[in-house]
Length: 406
Ligand SMILES: [Zn+2]
Ligand SMILES: [Zn+2]
Image (cartoon, rainbow, N blue to C red; front, side, top):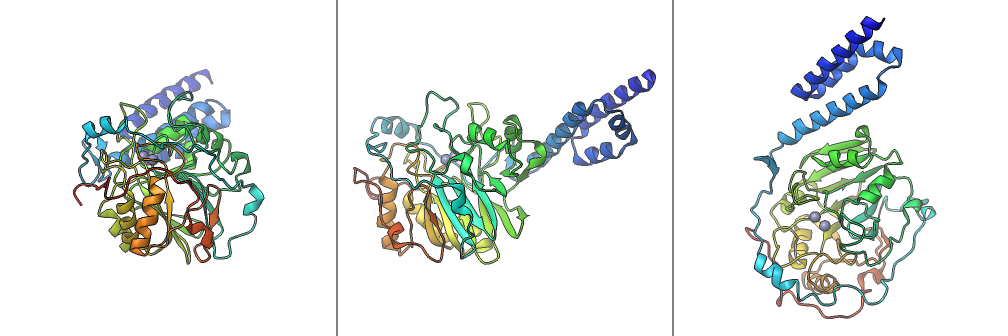
């Protein structure tokens, strides 16, 4: 018996080496099917080591998929268009930040679990929790995008952009969620504290390539995570989710820039469709998204954190409205605004510029307060008005933000 155990350990060691070298899911399937593993399981030995081997094989398979992506070039993910940053402008503008935070409390609409007991009449309801966090209900399924409940969008708890208001729906009041959907790993979209809370559930995670390694670090079991490249699709219940391109970047430290992919998502229901932009500068991809998956009943598009100094990673309000038209949106829902101060523009400026621009272009735009829900067929007229206070801001003409190369 002792001899058999030593033989088994040696065999496992040699197979682990094979996993490292081959790094493919077929190897994992082969290992699972061998009698060797069955006999070990019978003995009830080394079960945690086997779990580690499974996770390692899954990681290797994910890595193989990542490096074979068309977006992975020379060891990093790349945009389809080049990126220009004007560092002198960044420096100058940092000292001109006025009206950067609300001076009076933001009017939020507190929500609780039972508010979501009743299915939306239209089959589609979107609730803005704040920033890019949306509760998307479609055909009886519920999705949570970029869940951020943390106090700061920052790697540390004592510094960094602090939220303007507490999330109107406490995490403890979340209704049953069918999947968490992430756009990328920046701190204002990927909140470790929130992910660790969600680790205590069984909710699956739908994420772009490379993000699963991070999720594992924050306690999400690998079997709950599915990674996607641009234009790949997955079905969850009767809803199809399509991972769509964005023009942005990723990273959580000085040393990991673009090691994970960034994206937007199209939620395609039986009769209603919702677009979620993630973070993106303006690029021709919006038109293609519209051609492939439009029209969208609600298009949630990032509308703040823009700057003349970095027009190739965040879209300005005017080009955001062009993106809305490109994807064939019907109702424009601004996101990524009025929650954190992530640039030098006044916090109310995106809302003001969108109001002006939407009227000029005949765009149906809504401004829910944090916590408010909307269904595409019955948007309350009050939701089309501004809820934020007057304050200084720069017009599109005074401070145009135009992505390059388009
Ligand atoms: Zn980002
Ligand atoms: Zn962001």
